[in-house]
Amino acid sequence: MTSDATAFDASTPLARELADLSQRKRRLAMREFPLPSTPRVLTVANQKGGVGKTTTTVNLAAALAREGARVLVIDLDPQGNASTALGVDHRGDKPSVYDVLIHDESIADIVQQSPESDNLFCLPATIHLAGAEIELVPMVAREQRLRGSLDRFLAQMEEAGAGFHYVFIDCPPSLGLLTINAFVAAREVLIPIQCEYYALEGLSQLLNNISLIERHLNPTLAVSTILLTMYDGRTRLAFQVAEDVRTHFPEQTLSAVIPRSVRISEAPSYGQTVISFDPGSPGSVSYLEAAAEIAERGASHRGN
Image (cartoon, rainbow, N blue to C red; front, side, top):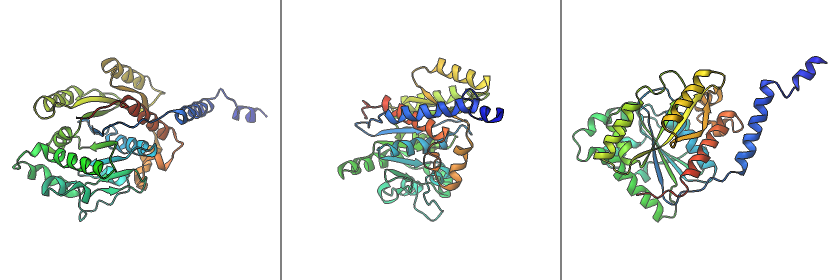
């Protein structure tokens, strides 16, 4: 009898967690995801590896697409993990973002629809992209290659009545020509920061690099969003890191945080994001909350 009572005890940690998740889902159901009046182009960047950069890219994109936005993900990482997570074919013989950067191919001829959503599209990366850094070096306006192609594509789609609301660019952790192309093509930078020791390590250098890009190559670029990832509410460290980030970046840091989650990590192995792989999980709900916040903050966004 005692064990049955304990199983349904609303004061247990599991019961509290389930009740909190249920409340969050109800609040989410009442939130609107306003669409921007012009396309928002965000580069998801962090020079530190393992912070959830690609995971954040694909899950935010999927969350916004689920809520009615037309979203394009540009995979600029030669590993092609974003392409994998979106269920898009990116074998070496497939046309990819490499052909856009090096051979001036049109994005419209290469972009693929993700099986996850009718509103979600991906410009995939293949292994050929690994050599693009070297091939870009002698090219004229090498830092502008992606921006020129993307601007033409977005204008073309707008004229066709199939305009995009969001573009997310997933780039490699190093600051090479691929990442510089991503910064020049974007209007906003989204920085995922993991809630672990050394979380802010290298961040000042990243911000300095973004500032250099802004001054010399892209005056419209700004850090608009910081998202806390891999948050473990059971640890004092995670709480302290979150507090430090919010203190330093009060305007940019989202209220939503992304928890450590096995389901988030498992989803890409099935060619899915956690949004479709496990829609009711804490990880999925957290990314939907972050997407709602991004949408709400940018409701009156005006592109350049």
